Image (cartoon, rainbow, N blue to C red; front, top):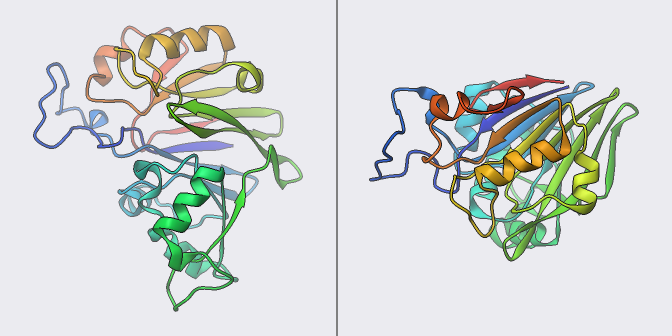
Length: 258
């Protein structure tokens, strides 16, 4: 099982237009971050999680040519705005229909933003077509590959936390949340790979700060932790040098295997 980080940035990407961050080395390509999304592969199946505004370019850069299932963690623009570019993947499927899973808020947003893509078949040749459904607690993709889900608090809305399990390995993807407790913590404990929101050093009402994320890693004890959804306050080299031994800053294009 492997996870590819297509993007690791925040709602506006990094760097921001017309913004200078002291200490952010823009000569380091790892500090250039598109909107956060990941692509997970196991048992020959391809799962795409979220599609921000740069989704098409992310797919071209990372060689993403097939998607079996799309999962939208929540309906915020930086995670949903690129879904129209799923049209090419719909084209390539025998049914021309993409299975799309999300929570209630995510499905409402899909229907509002892409009404032409929600139906029994594409409205026109080459148009996207989504078969939407609520993400279940457990989705069995193949006999050896399943995806569990849990609700995470993200300010006034809920986002989907995803747990990918294949042949005894576990990858947990918790982005856009401000705490990990209860069932979410239980499902994530002792993961092979734990991916967490890592917005900035200062507290935020709907995201994990750097300190909060590190405290969660210490509590859940993954073999490895990778941080995503970072602002320009996080310089790759500066922060990587002071992280614990099993913790890493993700970057656009990073591939991690479990």
